[in-house]
Image (tube, rainbow, N blue to C red):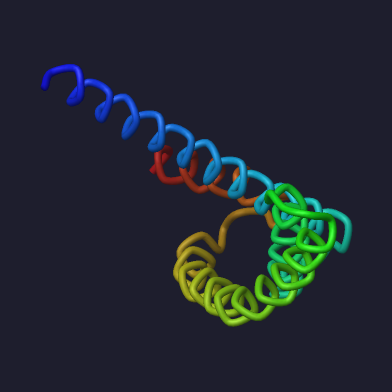
Length: 133
């Protein structure tokens, strides 16, 4: 009885770890591609989200098990579905970011806009200006 419980625990634990690694790889690939597209295009818009989701789904469709024909089907289906699902989600995400940044721009008008190059440096500048007050 104890042996069966230990085997079940190990099986569940292994499944959780493998699932977490897969989710982490998918998320890392998506955000890496999205940031690459932002840097290459110089614009942060919904098409970066669509391109990254389509390319990520295409790549992960390739590594699924099955014949070459089945993998090609998974790649095309994943690419189309990834773009179709992520277009409205990406649009919603960008609108929420714009809404969240409206208050930040109004509260920090004294910052020099030429010095701010990324979101991280902008957050650091805001933190420094708030701590100096």
